[in-house]
Length: 216
Image (cartoon, rainbow, N blue to C red):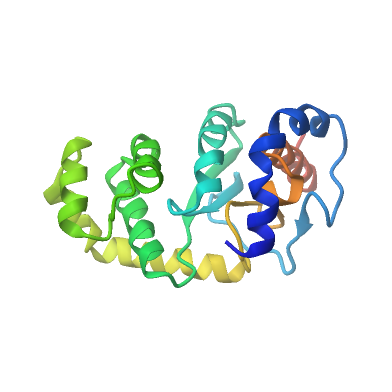
């Protein structure tokens, strides 16, 4: 996370309660609450409006946003799909964490393991890059360690990591968490100065994308 994003996002948790309701009452301001992506990028969710969250288990603000985003995901309309994309920013530690998420995703454990992983990284300060430490932790979490390690080293995860890195480059992601709506718009807590306001902004951007697609 760069310094500008860190400074802005660090205030988000403090002002979320105040900013969230107020934010919901006004229209988005282009260049402030969101920016348009040029050129727009193709999406991979079929006919659905795609929302991407670029994140890392290593990012504390991603941890703060995660339960809000998880609750928001449960309320999404059927024509919207949320996908989480881990970033590495060329950091070895974050590369391990990206592969950790992608392995959970392949195993169908991503949702269940989100909160425990953030706790392990930020509260317990576990070095999940150490395989022995990681294996012991995975076992405590009820994850099949042998299957995890096979998945972690698999071609499927390597391919997913390569694709995630390509997407981060295509969208010019410089800080996380960041949301991309329909390949056209981006918003983030650092832009709206509110964690809950981020999903409110995303709702409005989804409405814009739906209108542009000729849908009601």
